[in-house]
Image (cartoon, helix red, strand yellow):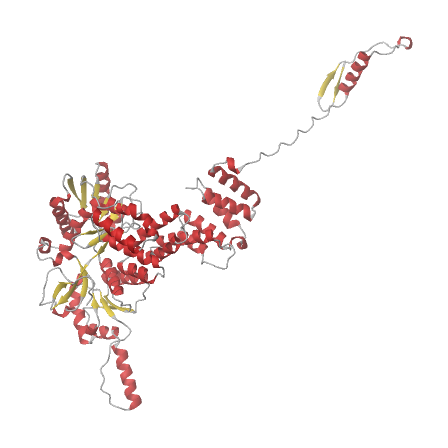
Length: 625
């Protein structure tokens, strides 16, 4: 026996048989087969034959869920980077709501990896912009979207609609309310065959109408170039002035009679369902105010207003707990968390700006009315309420625009107060698409105030022109310097004490022919005709309660803060209802309040007054002078 080795070890037993010539006989068939088998076993073993290749399973997209299809297309696009495969993968990811995991990041990497020429078309720019928007990068989305190009071959009706919708979304994020509303109006005409999308677009448009200032609504109705825009504004204002269900139905019927085929009719059933506006129950309310420390006086005034409103009927059936924040943001945040833990149904406060911002940053909120401006998310149960210089500056810009004045000369005192008002006024004019003519800063207590005012009014230039003419003609001309002709009104943003120093110089230089507007700070809250006689003619926004002779709030210290507290209770109970129906406006002691559904700010339309013989008089609506 011996062993034969090959590619695999095989043991073969060899049987030795005596052979002789005379013994050879023909082999039988069985013996021959046996011999063949033995010989084959002695040969070198052959490798097993290669298996037949297994074909990749064919994926039928119809058998995949949306997420599975997107994942499959992402894999395919990563494998070959062919532009059409990348586009298909991006479209599949964007079709998901919301895209899972890191699929957005994967799709965005694929878009960025395309050659510039492969992402330059309008359709491809739109894909990139949508990816950026979904990844919460609106600035990048704006950059990628770029301008509309009517000559682009990829600008199909669908691409144009989607691009316009994203454009409106980005404008809303930028708080360009007027431009966003205009884009939504143009988009609405293109969605007639897509009722579901059109309804969603119309709801956004309705919210934008609530976000607009009065001058912007008038501009939208007048200048949008779309007849439908005028009817939208008309319906919004008609319903805003309506309180009861029966009156709302009559208003809607009359509007339908005037506009029988207007697309806003789709929203009417839902809009009418929100009449009358119903408040929530008072429940357990916690108030956070600075009742000690440097801000104790305004804190006590706000609490006075809250208690007046609470016991006047708004707190019926509820409980009220008051906590002192001591003017400290960290204390305010701790008390806020404690109020949530204790089961508060709503929270009012805190008052100071940094404390309000601190509370807004918390991860968990109860329904809250902050008593100062702070950035809050659209879907948080938090609103903001404020009486501040910036609000007055915006109101002044709005009223001037409604009067047709577009060339403002702003005069503001040096310092933080003047900085705030000047900045807010400039921003408000920008939103109204108005360029401020000029803005100057003065020092009311300085000896050169008269010279500063004269320079601001352009008198130095006028004197120089008179002197130049005298030299050229050789004549002794009798001419008075004239104030500049490129302004049509003045906005003087200063507190009462400084206004009393500035205004006499305006009269001295002949600026009395121009309308003069100011903030509420021009009026301390109590008439003083002897000290304020020089202020006659000045128009300013203020709380209407200050002009109601019978109102007890007028006699309280810091009456505007008292009015703010009273309105805070009122608005807190109506926040949820107003969030669903932003066309509603709630009358309060400090003004009429409407909720901006995007910023969650309560926006005030104040009353307007004018000094006459040193005492403020309430103006009828629409009067400026």
